Length: 211
View 1 (tube, rainbow, N blue to C red):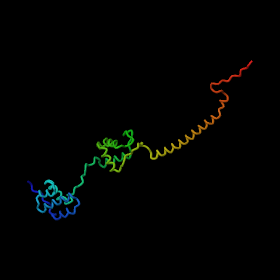
View 2 (cartoon, rainbow, N blue to C red; view 1 turned 180 degrees about the horizontal axis):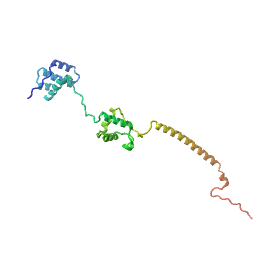
View 3 (cartoon, helix red, strand yellow; view 1 turned 180 degrees about the vertical axis):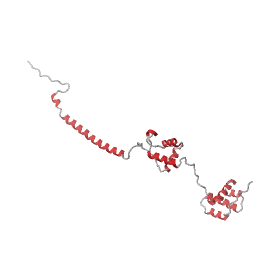
View 4 (cartoon, one colour; view 1 turned 135 degrees about the vertical axis):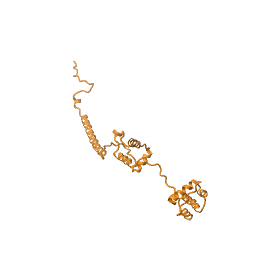
């Protein structure tokens, strides 16, 4: 059986117990007390009982403590799964979102997450889920992709100008229709042809002479 790894010599048991007392992290305090027992001469088995762990874990604590001191006994945040996209790919995605899709090329008039994920696969051969892409876009400052279709060549303010012109056209057209109806009403009030010709189904015969 190999000899246990000795603790670094620039600390002692009283220092570790003082740090454990002031620590606001429970797991760190428990690890410090276990290592303090080793400084006092306890065996690794006894230190493992104090820490509530096995001998292999005690060995790991000793290695971490020797390398980086008491701070190494604090649980670090897991880095998680590394991102599938690098900075250059993120910049390309941002440029594509800003330009918008070309319907004849991309087959869509607005970007959805599923469409953008398909473009990423075709461009970089990277398969990315919609949820993962949504988190990436939020980190890049995009809260939501365009929810309303818009032509890629549409000029800024074109819709407002079109609505304004349409409103004026409808108004003038409605006035013209009212004018035409007034003419019809005026024609209906005087129909000279009805004075010259009998109504449909009526005939005019000269009066019969009686003998």
